[in-house]
Length: 411
Image (tube, rainbow, N blue to C red):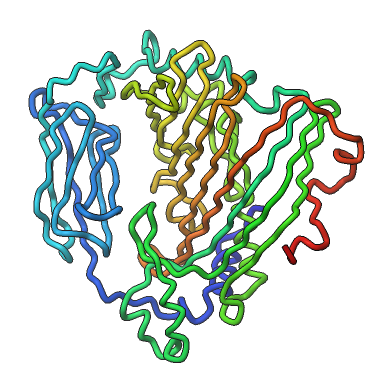
């Protein structure tokens, strides 16, 4: 689904928030910090450095030029930086104060990782004779055989949880007149593991399904056996909720050339032309489920492109299969009131193939840059795969791709 204009989407969110979004207010002051991280010896900028407030989940990372910027209401009094092969540093900062500048010079710890040294000088990056580019090209060359759809038949059990949460919950927000008689709802406030922000669950839908696939003639059917819906029905417009959750029902396949999200086409890091749109860096070799994997970071060449930044973890063998993917959008792109978007996927080896077993998508919607917004979260688990066992024709036939059991809501 693609929104025709921003006004339509604004009205949709207002319907969903109702009185919650009329007058955004804050009981905590914003803390704003920016700066640069460089190598203490070479003075070269360091990209992809992790920067977090101590004892919190709030953080960011440096860009290709080593720059970072972070602004939050949930700061702590210390800012820490950590980077593979360098000594971790932490410095005190002033909570509630904006326009702070904190630069870091990191010293190496002398660790010799048999990988490419990451530098961010644009003149030094090149595609030719670059092991990171060679690695992603091997992934691209082998992605068709690593797709689940390369099989003639497959089936699996699927558990899906879709959740919408109101975020940026502050003490002043809790004590508005509108909430005096329903203070109990704030007993359900939790903290996001993604960005450390408090949120209030509004709507939760859980679905248990069985999925069947046939390659020729191609057919894919989902049979929903159980559905459970919970939420504050009296306070939330169900039609608006349904529209927003539909935006989360967009399957992400890391092996696709184009990834559709929020009605927009993103260039996949495994697209055949990805080396022309991304810069790739080998960061480390790690162990994952008993296999050696390579941590490959990627970053858009143009910050305004509909592309991702993140990491692919790739088997260090001839299969060049992706075993884990982490992808985020950049703040520079304009994506219909989407403040942030994060994707995580995990794969497990079964019968010699790496299968997607965990899929996580979180979207941070916002009407204003710093006001109340919504978290949309979708978590999908895939289990009990069966390969190359054809089913009866009626399992695959029919125009509907999703079939709900009449008693699904009762289970």
